[in-house]
Image 1: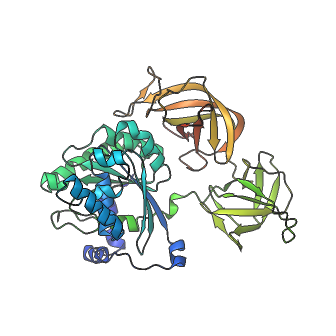
Image 2 (image 1 turned 90 degrees about the vertical axis):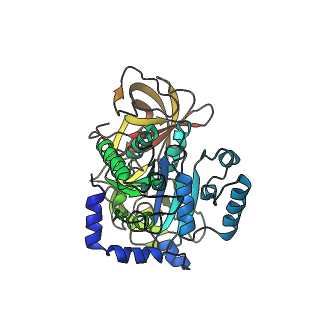
Image 3 (image 1 turned 90 degrees about the horizontal axis):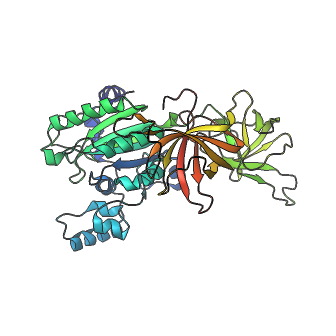
Amino acid sequence: MSFELDKIKEESSNHQSNKEQEKMQETTTQEPISSEDYLNMELLRFTTAGSVDDGKSTLIGRLLYDSKSIYEDTYEAVKSSSEKRGDENINLALVTDGLKAEREQGITIDVAYRYFSTPIRKFIIADTPGHIQYTRNMVTGASTANLALIMIDARNGIVEQTKRHSLIASLLGIPHIVVCINKMDLVEYEQDAYEKIRKEYKEFAGKLNVKDVRFIPMSALNGDNIVHRSDKMTWYNGPTLMYLLEHIYIASDQNLIDVRFPVQSVIRPHSEEHHDYRAYGGRIAGGTLRPGDKVVALPSGFTSHIKTIDFGNDSIMEAHTPMSVSITLTDNIDISRGDMIVREDNLPYQSQDIEVMVCWMNERPLQLQGKYALMHTTKSVRCIVKDIKYKMNINTLSRLTDDKTIGLNDIGRVSLRTTEALFYDSYRRNRNTGSLVLIDETTNVTVGACMIIGESSAM
């Protein structure tokens, strides 16, 4: 695990000095970007998490406002709403709080997504709720994130929801965590308050499987260390949040080693132009594909070679995760939706007995011996809950073997038996092939988000 001080030293030696960073940050504006450049820009997905009133929505509003990513009509609407509410300043939290109940109560209930870009990167933000009863919404927003912003109120320090969201971020395999110690203006911008929380969080994070943790002291309300460097915290030598979001390395976050291509559809145009065309469409879940590669189709086990790879209307010589492509093979093999194309010398696990960590998302508790529908990549099967191993104690990260009742927002380990074999990897190795969802067959409601446990997992 690597933490801020080591990262700051590394970044300082490999990149610009603080003055150069500051100059770059000051010039981060919304300049016109061509459509071709925009499509080729790297995408960073990040989520916010934290307890109630830690300032998640305000942070995003400030980030969008200071980076000039809010449309004028949106700004005017937020300004008008702030005046009607009697706020002294413009309430930037209203930029993401779109539901009426959210605006009335000043909280986030549902996941709010916002999209913006700078000349360096494009971003998708998931603003997730802080209340315990909306933890399932946090799981939804964080499931595809490259980075999580864990918000902590500098006055309150680490609370239960901080630990809960950090555990979920760890279980979801989010590669990068940025701990935003917010509301520093309410503790007089004191370094001791920041260092105390930083030390405590590092001790807690040592129990989690987290690759990269950074810390930033800030005031979302006043804009300190969000886009522009704060002149009130000269003791902090690290980057601003925007600079970190623009430059953090995410290219290695995807699994580019294990080839995994779940087939979503078989493409047969039946036209004069493409009379004998048969391709398999889907989204690459792992690895890199090239024409000529020898592959094997699961579950049949038949081998073939990739003939062509089509991306839109073009044939390309290389495709990698997470691209959506269609491929043709040199041999006619019986392949249908739910099958998986992989490399012959790099096979996934194949079993009907699956061990998972589940985050329960339904008011009705998980039923031992209960039957559920299961979705894994493009494959749909049915399953039964064979055993509930334990439930996690969020505060201590201990395993509760006496109380195995997994209810709404609880996290636990369970064993599943499926009607057909699944082709999967551990979630730690591949988030795409290592995740699945449980669905109530009577209501079609998603009731559980699951992370498949590999043989080497300690959870």
